[in-house]
Amino acid sequence: MTAPTITAAPLAGVAARATGDTLPLRIAIARLRAMGLTVRWDRDITRDGDAPEHSAGRITPAVHGGTGRHIALPGPGAPSADDHGVRWDGGAPEHSAGQADPVGLGGVGRGIALSRGGASNGPAGRIDLVGFGGAGCDISWSVGDTALMDERDVQAACGPAHLHGRARGGPRFLPVDYASVCAGVLAAQAIAAAVLARERGGPALRASVSVAGAALLAVAPYAAEATADRGSQAAAGPGEAPPFRSADGVRFELETLDPEAWLRFWEVLGAPRAAIAAGWAPFQRRFATAVCSLPNELFAVLASLPFAAAAEAARACGVGAVPLRPPGEVTEPGPGSPWRLRGTAPAGAPRPFTGPGPLAGLRVVEATNRVQGPLAGLLLTLLGADTVRVEPPGGDPMRGVPPLAGGLSARFAAFNRGKAAVEYDLKTAEGRRAAADLAAGADVFLYNWPPGRAERFGLGADDLADRAPGLVHVHADGWAGEDPAPGTPATDFLVQAHGGIAHLLADGGDPAPSLVTLTDVLGGLLAAEAALAGLLLRARAGTGAAARTALVDAARLLRAAGRGSAHRPRSGTPPVADPAAAAGHFPEAFDRVHGVALPRAPWTFTAKEAR
Image (cartoon, rainbow, N blue to C red; front, side, top):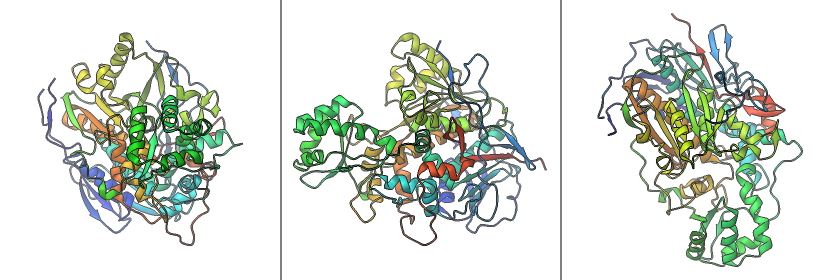
């Protein structure tokens, strides 16, 4: 089927008023304007009531052309009510009859309310949709009653400063305002979700989001692991942490997820066998621990070689070797649409709103692993969608990664609770047919496979367009065509190196990527945002959609935000908290299941009463 031409953005014809002048608000405005929202921006924060009412803008359709085992995880939240109307705190829906009961993680708990009021929870901006009955989003700095007033406060109290400094032996603040950037994307998601709910016949929804809530979501896997295994906490040991330096002065990162490739690479270079063996475990676990103390002998081997020789050995052995680039050398142009959004096929009316969550009544089929994809699926689940994971026979291997809680990996639970799961062998024709049938009945199909794999499975956007013309197809990619060399692994630390982020993080020393998975988490937020953009396009323009976001887009957004001020010392900063302490200090942001802190939704939605 020939892809149709889209002649309108998802929010074309919708207007809003924005009030305030903070980075999270600026990020949200930029993301929403890219969707076509018309924004009138007042730079001073006021509390003078809702935006003036006008008739809500409408988009004119302008599209041309053409048996698995079910496993469920419990939902993270439930609807509640207050005296302003029905409030949705981000809980997952009940799964349909016939699916297995949740395994190992207990029942459904309350969701998070991120804005309880009080002077300590200072405003960071607001967005009021025009003509939507009071719908919009309020952005604050803190969660609950804790007094946090800026990015530095948030990084200290919520865990990012502890995690970023863990590899160097002490707290270090991120010189980019990372939590503020994430909060801006979450606020844009809230506005998109509110418009989508209205388009599907739902009420006017008012959202709240906070910078602290965004930070706590980012550290959630670390908090889950820390609260599951209180007897141990990762810490830097003897040795050095990457990046490496070659004989000709090139600083670079290495990556492989294959222990055999790791062994071959170092043996080719003549590294001592004991050092090779000792280095693999911390190297592999650095994504989970935020530390990576490697034997000094490995650094010495690479320091004796020019970078070209090290890179050639890496290529021959299936290892990625990527130099650190300063932001000024990152010249790849960004995509025309932040989500590379395109139409796929004319579609009928969207499913009606069933409430209470903005995406209630919609189904997401997710084929993802690790961080970026599962987090995107979690966010859609927390917005109310019914999400089903496609896993290989025997289940996702990450389910068994220690520490366990109730027989399930704490880290896996952090980003996968509230989802059902089926097991299909996609190496077989039967498994691929079953996956295609499942995806064709969904509203969103989300995956983070390498480029081309979906098409090989017959699950590409064009493959499914005839069967499911209204499907929103979201590829959470890594390089999106911007890889430094063919076959380079698309992982967080290589993207930080190649995307200029390592240099943005330099603070009185040599540039180095953070061992916190910055682009993985932000990349997950962007993939969820792409799904919302596609759902809006379907609802307002009558077309199915395909979107593609990537880790390089997360790096691009951080470069656009630039250096922040959180790393500059000042008086009054709260004590630096590790993730377990942060989870204890902000109980509103987590459910406790088997003692493990698992994240609640980063938004609260309140249904405004009719006027």
